[in-house]
Length: 330
Image 1 (cartoon, rainbow, N blue to C red):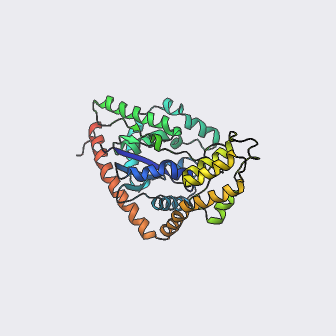
Image 2: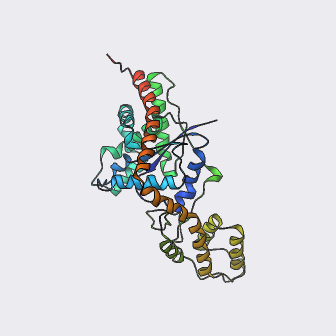
Image 3: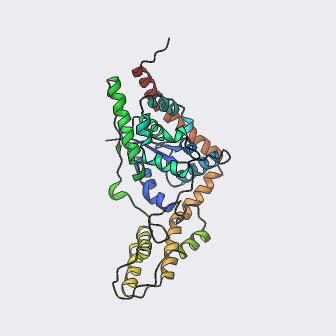
């Protein structure tokens, strides 16, 4: 059964290895199995500290990276959020049925208030409504979300249910979380703890050149090495082995596992091999990113095509929503 899948793509920050092996490779597979709408969330970015000089540049950068990593504009609708004005109109209409109290209790809102007390704007408060508009506009049935977005998805279901109840309809489906399950891979960072993330500063970016990437891997945190055969691995060392299991051949990983278990491992050799294997993954993508970034005509065509697909779906939904709510033309 084909699902209608909607997912937003942040419009700031470069993609890293964790993004690639996390959601992105699943997006690439998903686009051929379901009706997918992937958008670059430039409107959402305005809730923090937008830089008008960088907004368009960031959108172009993210677009090039997702295309290079495998999103196919012929297989999915890949568009820029602000190119679909129906998003803003549904956002307005949904806000008429959303209560201030429930928005103020949102965990992400409370966190943002702490982080940017000088800029607690209405967009920040109503972020869950905008996310709901993105999803409900295409009457999505599945939404890939991270743990930090689960509360927002639950609110989207609540808003859909509330709309249906108020107007005595079953128009909006209640979208479910798209759980990648065993297919979801978490890449640890290079700092010895936690997952790979931009804010943690422990990333390998798809755009890193060879010299930069090798330097990052060689500086990865390890320990003094095992003192006894088959000793448990410390978290930093286990992190390196986790990355190696993902990017390297099984016999390569097995070789270094044996060296570790016999107390003969040289972390420098392991890191060199790991860097080689990561580069086999990232360098072809990097070359493609740079190629796409220099082709404005291609990117313009992609977003125009994506917006056309998205607006066709959005216009149908919005027309029906306004009819349900009682709007009539003279």
